[in-house]
Length: 452
Ligand code: MG
Image (cartoon, rainbow, N blue to C red; front, top):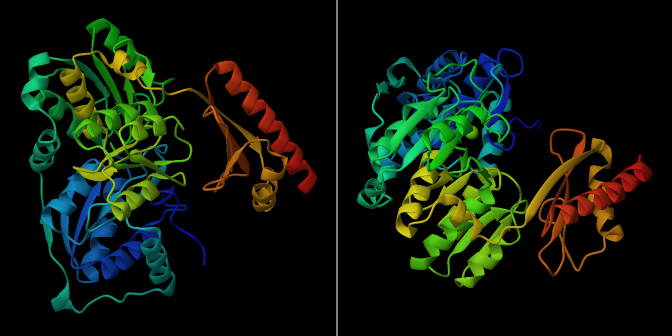
C-alpha cells in the first residue's frame, strides 16, 4: 500500500499531489476512526480555506460534529482538543513548506499527533474507499470558535508571570506572515514584555522571509533586535510549532542548547526524569540530564515520534535540534510560544541574559552535509557501514551513528524521501567536526559506489 503520511502529516502541491479529493477522503477516514467531535484549524495559506471547507464537509458527511477554530497555530488546535475533550482534530497546514504546498496534520484526542499505527489505519480506510456517508438525519453540526484566550491563558499559566513582568524584557518576534501572528505577540505582551514585531500580517504567499525560519533569513529580526537592544528574538515557522531563538546578541540558539537549558532548569525541581530526543541531537544532553539523575531516551528523527515516545514513557520533556521543543506539563507537542515563555521565565529566575545561560550548556560544535545515495542501495549502506567504521559505539536507531568516548560522533542517515544521505557530526572544535564529516562522507561514498 502506498504511503500518504510523511514524517509529519500528509503534504503536497495543492490541486496536483494534494487534491480536494485526497483531503476529503482522508478527512472521512479520520472522522470514522477518531470519533464524533473533531476540531478543525487552518494556517494562513491561500489554499487553506478551500482545503478546510473540503475537510469540514467530509467530516460532517460521515456524521462528525466539527469544532471550527478558524486560522490558528497548530499547538493552539492541539491544546483545544485536549482542553475541550474532543476526539481529535485536523490541522490544514503544510507547516514550513513553500506557498504552493498544502496538507493536513491529524491530532488524536490527547492533543498529540496520531501514532504511526493510526496513520496506517487512516491510509487503509482511505484506499478502501470507506467510510460511507451517513443518512440525512445523522449529518453533523458545525460549531465555530473565534477566541484563543483559553490557549493564551494556559500557556502563560505555566510560567511565573510576575517574575517575568518585573524584568520588562524586550522581545522581537518574526512570525513570518504565519498564524503564530495570532497568538505569539499577545502572549509576549501578557508576559509584560515590550514587543516588537515583523511579518505579522498573515499572508499565504509568505512575502516576508518565507515560511521556514533559518538563521540566514532572520536578518531583519537581527537588525530590529540590535536597534531595540532586545533581550530575546524568536522566528516562528508557518504554523507556529517550530521556532528559532536568538540571544541578545542576535546569535541563533539551536534546539539542543535550548532543550539542554530547559532540562537543566526543570530538573532542579523534577530530578530523575526522562528526556526524549532524536539521535541527531547533541550527545552532550546526556551530561546535563544524567547529572540530575535523569536519562535521555533517544529515538528516530521526527517530531511525532518524540511526542508519542513522551506519551508512552510519561516523559515531561522532549525536543529536536532544529528548534522544536515539547514541554509535557503543558502538552507533549512542539510549541514555539511555550518555548519563548519558558526561556523568559528562566532568564527572569536566573537573572542572566540568554547568551550566558546558553554558554553554560556543554554542547559541542555541530555540522551537517549530504552526499548522493540512490534509493536502491540505502538498506545495504546501513548494513555495511558499521563494517568500515572505526568507533567503540555503533548506534543504529536511525541510520548509523558512531560515538566515541569523548562524546564526539558522526551519523550517516539516508533520507526517507530523496536520493541522498545526510552526514551529521558533533565534536569539540569546528576542525574536528569538518574532519569527521569529510572522513565519513568519503567512507560512505566509496561504499555507495561499490554497491551501484
Ligand atoms: Mg511547523
